[in-house]
Image (cartoon, rainbow, N blue to C red; front, top):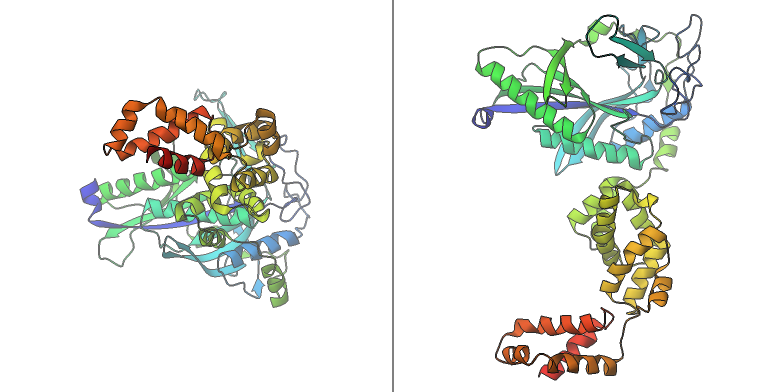
Length: 480
């Protein structure tokens, strides 16, 4: 299949649904809290009872504008809501209130690894409920579905990209960066597993050199970055195989099954006219003043791309800066450590080294440990002042993560302060040299790499407490 892929160009566009972090729903006062008893977060508006009227949640609009600005979109002075007709068991009204031809955000972009991915639009809409499928035997009276309407009416922002991506890896990077942005600006928690961020991928192929897109298939039910990449790779190969055998790709919606690692046909793909959009008669068009937009713009938090650039300006490598930014908890913790005046390079060495290893082993977030920014800043200060060595710092950071004890107290209680007394170090170094005459002879015959052996022996004798610079200078003097 790899050779066949050389004949085709892949065209990918993503539709990402971000659940906005408001306390109540987009048109109703119900709570949006996750994980509550089924159908406990509903009211007549959510249930679509006759005679009820929707009332727009202003905070939803604020979050929509903020996201649009973060995605370099234009915010039109007017947007409106529309009715999108379709009949799902978990859609109480039989239609969804969405935005069609006048969305809240238009014409944006994201720069991913030096390539610009266009964003066609981002529009506000309400979520449907959730079907809970019960039974698995296939017998009619034991296989059924239940409807939970807690999620119905939850505010969504659907972000629609241009078909600018050309590989599964590009699509994944775009999705990862989009998740970073909505999390950093505080509009969505980006939890793919809980469904607060969902992605539909539109994929087609065309012969290399062509400018006519092929027929696209849409993949739904993608709930992780790895699954997105696998689903796209599978779909590319499926479409190439169809075309190579003389068939035609059908425009349809397909479901990704991550267990069997394949897509399956779900239904024919609808076009806009199938939804019979018309303006929502119970909601007036919304006018968005430039003052409103500027007020939100002035409160824009630092974006992930800006944070990466700032970290790199402090001397971090691009890799370290990227890894820290992608873990928002670590980035916020790192910023607090920096604000306390800690050396950035020493701080990032601890975060990328011992701290990250501990978090990986314990499956914890930094906020779940007992380490505070103040304690890490103090530890770095002790190293900078040469009160303790860097190696001692690496030894006690685990205790700090587990117990939350300040570094100074651990150093004092365990007698770990650095030995800087040159007389004491010289005495120990002399004993090490005298105890290893064979190594001394080899060193003096030209095997300079043995110098590290002597340094290691002195550090071993002092349990890592000797000042490394003093050890090096004294050994050079003794060994001539």
